Amino acid sequence: MNGDAMDQTDHTEEMLGRVLTVGSRTSTAILAVGLVLALLPPTTHLASRLLTIGLVALILTPIARVAVSVIAFARRQEWMFVLCTAFVLVLLIVGIIVAFVD
Image (cartoon, rainbow, N blue to C red; front, side, top):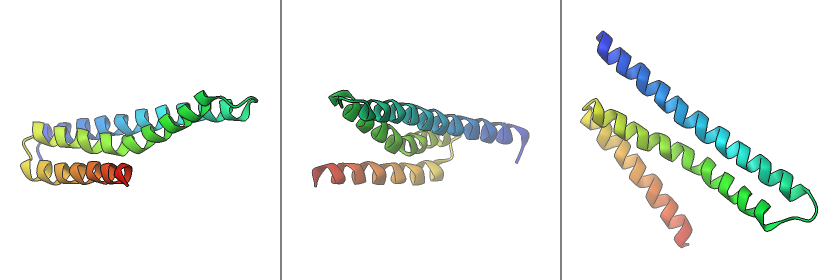
């Protein structure tokens, strides 16, 4: 690997790490607030909504990582990896759609 390719790989890894960090921290914060509100009497509808939003954010975090990977591979013109990660992304999206339909 030459220096440019290594720099691109490092940048991609940092970007993917940021996506996972932001997603997990955001979902954790939302879940924590929802849990605190759920434990305080009287329980509000807001607590239930925040818990749901936090779980959705947690589920979407790895999906966002795969989407960012597709974009990163496309920028680097690594078409085989684009194809593979796009396929994984489609499978994840189809799985979510099927879960909500049933």
